Amino acid sequence: MWKISDEIIESLEKEIEEIYRRAWEFTEKIEEWKEIPSAVDCTACGVDGSRGVERLSGVILYAISAVGVGDEIREMSEITTLRLHSNVEERIRLHMHTSEFRVGCFAEEDIVLVDGSLRGAFIRPASYPEDVNELYRNYEITNFVGDFVEVLEEHFKDIERDLRTGKAKKNYLISRTEFLKQIENSYRIRESRLEDFTILAEYIEYLHALNRLLDKRVFFVAKSFYTHEFNVDVCDSAIIDVFALKNFGFPKSGYLVFKPSFKKSLPWFVRENRRIFKNLFREVNSAFVRLEDGCNLYLLETTEEVKDEVLAKLKGIEINGYPIPLLQAHKIANIKRGELQNLILGIVSTLNPEFLPLLRRSREVVEE
Image (cartoon, rainbow, N blue to C red; front, side):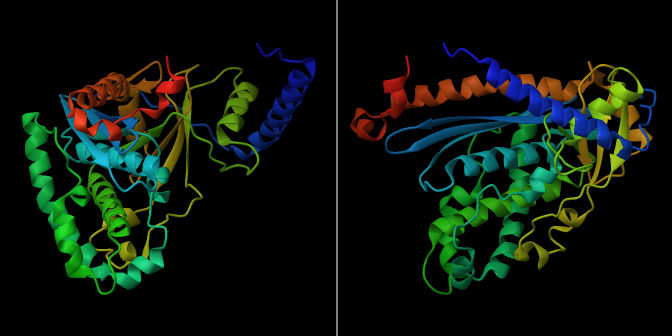
């Protein structure tokens, strides 16, 4: 057991004291902490996702699940392999977010709530070809993007049908199908770079899903955030918490609307296809929100205007300061995470013993 020395405690206390002092100083930048309006009724769909990954000796096997909880539960589950082993964690995460956005696209409630950050959605890609210029030299990207989006629009009809019938349990990334391999040659102008082409197609599927999602009244709610709108050295949540202590003596409910100071990272092929990805060019509006006294502070991000009407609806669906649909979606996603891992292990155990050289779990040596 590591015994923590007085020196470590003193050092940590000194650092935290400095953050507190600076946060107190920058509270002067908060001009108004608005009251949360009275609650009004609304229907809302909360969206969250989960993933399970098994790194085997010869293959990466993973499953993702996206859950939408509103008037009914909508779920999309997929299980697949990742044979192109670059940017593994990023690509699996991107796949999960793509599925989350797709589930949210078909919500029929008044508003859609997504667990996470909208600015984070814009500053991805979580994965991207290592040599982008080489990819552009080898493929006719502009034509591919326009044609691929048309294919994705048709694909959405199948996704909607499966979600409505509760049968959305198969692989939905077109970028992982034989179809992409078949059309790759049509857009190739020099040498084949199939791995990079596949990663690009995954990213386009993600952007298409996000663009479609933003047709809805969608609000991203981040539980953990480290933004720096007031000062580059101290995070906003620390400043707001100290502001509440300084002015009210406790974490008072309320909200503060602001324009976020970040720049979207949209590649040139999105800018050239602005008509196709029009929602990605909408302004992002943000607010720091505490829905109930003494509860947590959240970051709300949306392409809508953050008005009292929006906050009143959120107040109408919260418990302990957090939107109930998101809480329910998170709990189901957590359950699914364990199910997905067990599902993967179950699949591995049923495969042909001939494949065992590819299916060794290298982590077994350190696991009990």
